[in-house]
Every structure is written in C-alpha cells, then in structure tokens.
Amino acid sequence: MSEQTQPNGSAHPKLFGTDGVRGVANVFPMTAEIAMQLGRALAYLIRSGPHRHRVVIGKDTRLSGYMIEQALASGIMSMGVDVELVGPLPTPAIALLTSSMRADAGAVISASHNPYQDNGIKFFWRDGFKLPDETESKIETLIFEKALDSLRPTATKIGGAVRLDDAPGRYIAQVKATFPRELTLDGLTLAIDCAHGAAYKVAPAVLKELGAKVISLGVSPDGKNINHKCGALHPENLQASVLKHKAHLGIALDGDADRLIVVDEKGQVVDGDAIMAICTGELAERKELKKNTLVSTVMSNVGLERAVAKWGVKVVRTKVGDRYVVEELRKHHFSLGGEQSGHLVFMDHATTGDGTLAALQVLAVMARKQKPMSELTKIFQPVPQVLLNFAVKEKRELSHLPEPTKAIRGVEKKLGKDGRVLVRYSGTEPKVRVLVEGPDAKKIKQYAEEIGEALQRALG
Image (tube, rainbow, N blue to C red; front, side, top):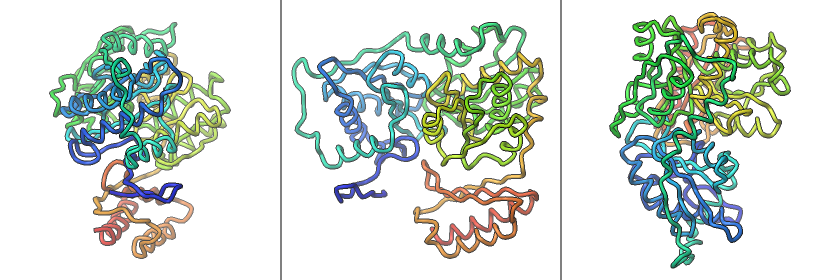
C-alpha cells in the first residue's frame, strides 16, 4: 500500500492508479467497504443545486461485479444521489451515456484486460471525461479523513435506483452514427472476439446492423472467463477464425471494450500503432486531422512517427495511459490519439477509447480505399521493439537504484541514436516494464533481459 502526502501535510493510502482503483476483488482496495466509501465521496462531490442528482453505473462480466455494484450504488444513494444501473456495457458506453443523458457522473466497474479475480472502479464526470488527478485526490481525502461520516440524508432525501433497460440500444445507435452514412458493411465477413466481456452483445450487434456477416467469439461470459485466452491480449483464436472463415477482418476487444487490436485477412495481428498510422493518414488526406497532429504515448514505436511524416503530421507523446492522451487532446484541441495497446481516441466522436467505434473507423478506411487491411498496414514499418514485464515486490524510485540505472545507461550507450530504452512501473500490476527499441531484434531482447534482471535483484 503506497501513501501520498496531501497539501495539508497528512498522509493516507493512495487508492487511484493510472486508470481508477484496481486490485484483487475482495482484497483492499477492491473491497465492498471501499466501494461504498468511493460512492459516498463521489456523490458528495457532484452535488450542486437542489435538483435530484444521478450517477450511471455500468460494469463488465466479472463475478465480483455484482458485489462491487451493490456496494458502490449503496454508497451513492446513502448521500442522496440516485443511480441508474445499466449492467454489462463497455467503458466508453458509460462515458457516452453519462454525457448524453446529462447525468452528474458515471462509474464503471471493470479491471479492463486483467483476469476475472481482479476488479476496478473508474469514474467519469458529467461531460463524459475521466476525473482529473486532483478530483481523485479529493475523493481519497474525503474517505480517509472520514469527512463524510456524519453526513447521512434521511427520509425522501435518500437516493433511489432504477435499471436502464434500453442502455444497450442507445449505445449501439450512437456508435453506428460515427460510421459514414454513405457506407455500409454489406458483403464483408468480420470475425470479432469480445473477450467474454462487456461488449459481448453490443459489438456484434453494431456490425450486423451495418450489414456485415459476423463470426462472434468470446460472447459467452460465465463470470470467470473474461479475458481468458481470448480478446485483445490473446488473439490466437481470432487469427484462426479469420483464416477458417476467410474473413475480411478480425476485431479483438478487451474485457471492457475500450481497446482494439485487429487481425488482417491473412491472419496477422495489427497493433494500435499501425491502426493509428492508417487512421491518421485517412484523416490527414481528408483535411480532418486537427492541427495535423497525432497524440501517442512514450510506448509507441518510432516507426509511427516515420509513417505519418509523409503527410506532414507531427506526433506528440505523453505518459502511458489513455487518460493522459485524452488530456493532451483536450488541452490543444487535437482530434486523434491513442496507445500501442489499442486504446484509440477519436475526439470528434468520443471522450475516451472505444474499441468498437475504432473498428468502424478502420472499416471506413477499408471501404473508401477498397483495399484489404494487409495492404493498408504497409504504410507502417515498425522498428524492432521488445517489451518485457518483470514482477517486483515493491516500486521504488527508479533513479535511486544504482545497479538498474547503470544497466540502463549501458544499453543506451550501445544503442546510441539508433534506439531507445524506456523503463516504467505498471500502473495496475506489481510489475516493471522494460521497453527497448533498436535495429537488431536479437540484441535488444538481450538488453531488455539484462535490465530486467538488474531490476529484479534491486526490487525483489
């Protein structure tokens, strides 16, 4: 459990990571007790004026989602705020519904790509954007300083709950509206792997309603199979399905459907960098890429910058995390950004990453250019890159670790201007990630392993 020092000098456990609160379900901080307190704190912060306030709550398909949903809703209602329960729906659907329904906030119960035993909670503000760091800090302070213990509305001031049965239909309609009206998916065979997650109903429906023949995988959730050997992190089954059914494209989503990985008609995986390059080119050619700028993170391959340079596009890099991509997009009024992992944000259509929406934008490029995905990806030639993850027992400041620092500097010296090294802690797991780029694939793997071994010796 890490701590942070507040402006007033007090210290308390830090709940929020790079994407909300996350951990093993029923273990701190992902307990029913903390979920209830998070609900109370959120409800307190959104109250403004005499009107009834509302929070939209969605989730993915994890077994623990029922427990967390009830606790979170209870906390919100205990502060006099109503909740609207939508059940399993993609994270971007909650962002969209929160904004379109003029709710005061949205909450998503999901651990995204993590295994089923994990869970998480992330919040959206009334405008559909994730909470800024300072608001998350206020929530933590309210919880750990017990500022809300004495605030308990009674009688008619207690919040109520309703189930929003038409939420899936609303989301499907709004996502379909992002696909160019002059185009259809008629004649296309598409394979989609929903990872037994939040999009298992809505994503195939979107594709079918636009005219495609759909081969659906990962659409039988049982509470425990979410992300298990399927979806964006494990596209092997999708690759086989694309080849078996001679599909024009394979679409892989993760558990909460906010990221997209594509498989071309030859069964080859296409990652987020290649998808960004394709979509950047289309928007740039149509004069729809605002300020001719693409936003990506430090994890993106340098090949992305080289690919989009042909259109005179500038690439701006941020810290890892789609929230930081979105912050940069909003700050400078850019229109497209994303991560190599497949979080793609089309700001003209959405406030956060949306795998289904991103798939439609890719399909629109294919339809307009009348080219298969394998042809479109030729514009992107990645530099050899290796990313290794190493489990650690603690997360200490990397610059204070002599042996790993020496190893990193040694590799950087060997690579010179032909490569780069990036070492960072995972924001959601007890791991350190080591990324190395360079001209020799064999050597960069060796370099990454050397750095990782030094880190494990230092961090246990």
